[in-house]
Length: 291
Image 1 (cartoon, one colour):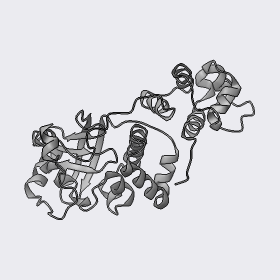
Image 2: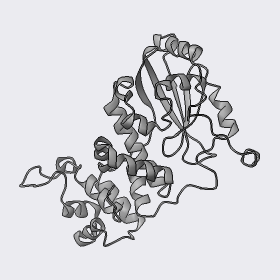
Image 3: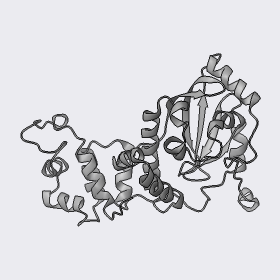
């Protein structure tokens, strides 16, 4: 992964290239040599000087005001997740609390997992390590036993594309969400190691990471072709975990009475947990549980 001390400038350049001139009332064409808007056009739209905006992109200006960033975010037509990421890159958003471990699961959350007997529920770390699962999710993810990180599953596991027929969409959204987490937790060693390894070893990951898009995981429709149960269609909802900033609870539910619901029930009934699996629950310590 190439080192860079100008993450803010890279982000601005990438998003400037995506703005269609016609969408902001400017002429398309006109001898444009690169896609998107020119620096001076963004500067005019944001109400800042061209020189100041150029210095921001070049990394020669590193302390923009919140008001200026807000104006640039509007000029770049950034969605809420991307706007928040812009502020974090400039060091203007407070970082989430770090007094709770991000790789341990609170006992109450572990009990909550079992409250979804007909859904696949699991907890992810900021680096998308699977920290805990209910029995349904353990059965659903069984083709990837031994690979407890969902990003590595997508880009390194030989069965990923067979199990996830909508792999391009899923891979893109996962990388965008990982970049969002990297902005929230810039010092997270798990994210750093994961990105460095995949950057070196997966050109597809590298291309998506270089895209600079940030987008959180929210509601998503997902298709799984499980080798033992066939096609399973699930709607996933993502919830942030307040007790452990950065952790997320994902719950995938099938349509009631559908073949997908029957397949999940079957999988949970026949699945035998692998004692050697690294996707076991990582509990809080006794001190943490009493906190």
